[in-house]
Image 1 (spheres, rainbow, N blue to C red):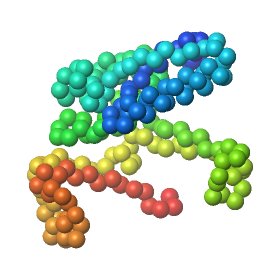
Image 2: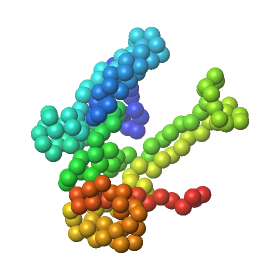
Image 3: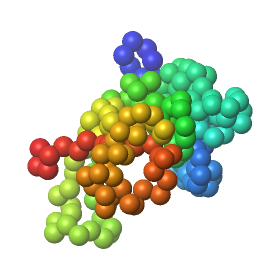
Image 4: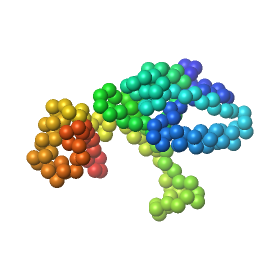
Length: 193
């Protein structure tokens, strides 16, 4: 950055978090697609240098138990101003509730910008898809992500489960392990707002 202007070098270093579960499989394909796109777009004059940083299960292997989101990872992302990540697990029992939410909050990633447009030849259920050209701003850190959560085994979880059992027995019966489950309530805006 120079002042408020982003200077992108010809060979930028971009941190990546491979991710958990299917993350390694997704990353193996994604990196090939991204590298090929950069090669095609710039005729070989630009190339991304990938730098692995850690979060999730792999982070626990590299940094030790309960190191779901190490400060090193946050520091690198802040230093390089960019990162790409795969899907991350939700830790069970204490510590971080969601690595994804923690990343958004720690890095103050307030909005997820989703450009939406139609590409000629792509099937579409919309009557005139060529008119679609918009940007959706999805708020990242509050609203749906600021749900009410009760840790498994806590007094609040027990009280909430008792309420469910007594007043919503048909739903309570669907909980597989009611004594050890954590509970999360995600608020959703009224339809049409």
